[in-house]
Image (cartoon, rainbow, N blue to C red):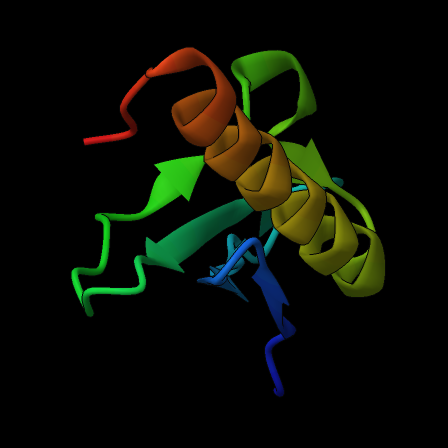
Length: 82
């Protein structure tokens, strides 16, 4: 399984999707963010209401979108994901 990765505002966002076999929505979205200085965050999960999806591709894209939002929150509003 390949994972999506993108660069957003000099941060690298890596989709970190976990599979939970046997569930109707087995894909748990999440991401890891690497800052320009090389520091990588722990896995950041999607909000509970949106965390589990029935399609891997959807989960990966949602994870990347969430990572971009987290980067924007940190850079524009001083919030931290640590």
